[in-house]
Length: 172
Image 1 (tube, rainbow, N blue to C red):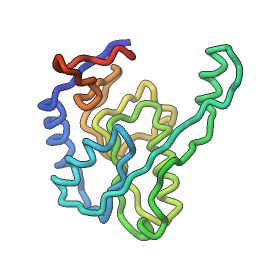
Image 2: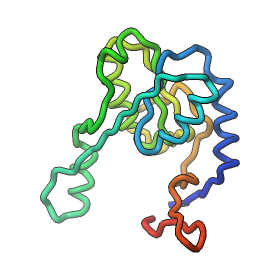
Image 3: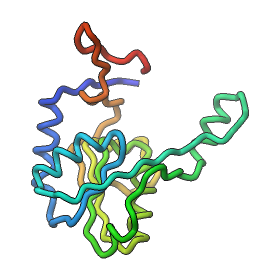
């Protein structure tokens, strides 16, 4: 799999590409941890949003099987576990922008979107990168995205910082 390491300047350009796309004003933003925290903060500042909420979601692999392929299949079929989520009264009747760094399979942002929609909110999704090749949801895509990609993106906030400068994590 190809990898692309982005700089902070690259992220600024992506944010600059997103901002003109927004065709509505939002009442609140839900950032998906951890990837959505930085772009969410940048967008909140640019859009002058002060109601910033967070959602943390996990898709636990429940298989005890030692077979790696079986574990992966089980993980893809797992139900989302919401570790942290805004109270319903903070979302009801609001126009909510969900922000994450990337839409790969789309499972996380779609789970968050569905739960916020269930709270009678009007929901919009936004990411820096959309990967249509990994998308599990057919023609469903983010409402707003800065770029499409088929690579594994490494954002500047994902690098490991050590005493000897910036090093890329060896957990690829």
